Image 1 (spheres, rainbow over the protein chains, first blue to last red):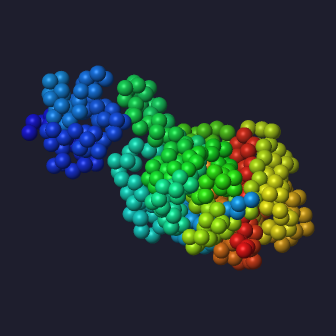
Image 2: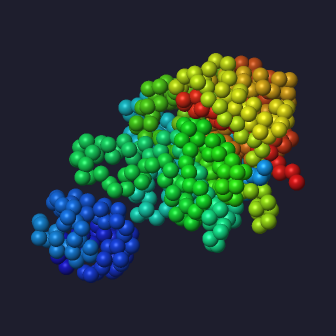
Image 3: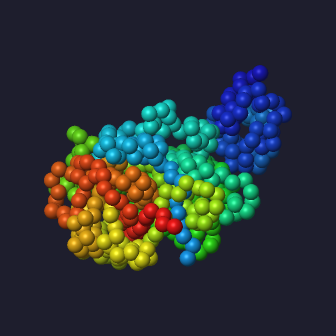
Amino acid sequence: MSDVADRVKKIVVEHLGVEEDKVTESASFIDDLGADSLDTVELVMAFEEEFGIEIPDDAAETIQTFGDAVKFISDAV
Amino acid sequence: MRRVVVTGLGMVSPLACGVEETWKRILDGQSGAGPITKFDASRVATKYACEVPLGDGTDGTFNPDDWMAPKERRKVDDFILYGLAAAEMAVKDADWMPQDEESLLRTGVMIGSGIGGLATIAETSILLHERGPRRVSPFFIPGSLINLISGQVSIKFGFKGPNHAVVTACSTGAHAIGDASRLIQTGDADVMIAGGAEAAICELGIAGFNACKALSTKGGDDPQAASRPYDVERDGFVMGEGAGVVVLEEYEHAKARGAKIYAEVLGYGLSGDAYHITAPSEDGDGGFRAMQAALGKAGLEPSAIDYINAHGTSTMADTIELGAVERLLGDAAEKTTMSSTKSSIGHLLGAAGAVEAIFCILALRDQVAPPTINLDNPAVEPRLSLAANKAEPREINTVLSNSFGFGGTNASLVIGKVAD
């Protein structure tokens, strides 16, 4: 797994309080990992902080799964 | 009129997490004061407070993990954490965790706070200034709003009745219990979870109360002796934090389910000073009228009161309240005991009235008036007993609890044993 994926996973585990093995490529933050809409806003903020990037609101809406996040961030950094 | 009784108690205090643990230490004359650890207090005038003792949950310590999962806790200010913990204790003590829709619809929540998420607001405002608006957490607002204890409690237990929150500074806890009792009397609910919570021991909170000259500043050498209501050496209140929550229930409802009944809310009185934003009038007229109104609602003469838990914050206002109480009681003062438990736990602001109502209920149960500690040289010669430095075992059938707040907002509760 890439460095980006490791760092994203760490953030997801911390913020959502889920087991690491639940955070799979296709895991949806809301449907599978128990997040609500406010949690996803906070997650995106944490990604921005960790990777020093800005994720615009319309892009943030497309980040639904762990895989989406890793892909977006890998392209952005 | 429907009668209202108390069937559950919950508390997080500077002496302990839990009602019985706190009460034991109160009767023992202990103080919850110490140097401030929650923030670096080197810049503020007052460097001591009564903080909730954190720990692993044993020996009366408060373990946040016992009450809220770490990932949820990050999203709320401490006043919500304390309020939720006290509410859970009260609901469990009352054994009132119904699952049926009708019971859930008939149970409401009214837990307030004087200031709300002050520490969170202060920290977020610094973040906004330094890093800009995009760094403000989506949980900032719902984690700071005063009515979010009531919201969180309703979500946790499914209570769908009236959901409300009082904000009347240091009268909050007493107003919440009084107003929630009224909602039961008028039939809006059968059960109300009511009380107050506060967590304002942060740099902004201490600096703010220091600026209005309300806090003790001379007790640095011996913080445990700094809160000294009625004493000639008193120099301001010592800030406390925590929460007090009670379960209020319509009498027949409580009887029908065989609930343990602690006491009955007999009377509740409210008044406004119309005088000054932080000081009471010299004659204590506002407090006098609140007490008078509460006794009127209870249909009792002042002489019926055995014990009074005073507002008594360890400020100049102590003797004003004392004067008003003695004027109200007349000759009956000779046989009445009044004490300020703020001598032990400091001033819990919006939680004070709720925590002190619980002490009143325990005084009724155990037939003992808790002490006013650190009372070595009374500023005036009182006609009533102030239970100086020692708990006072005595007959107690009816109690009165006073709470007065900035803005000139006063609340008095009269609580008594349940008569059939």
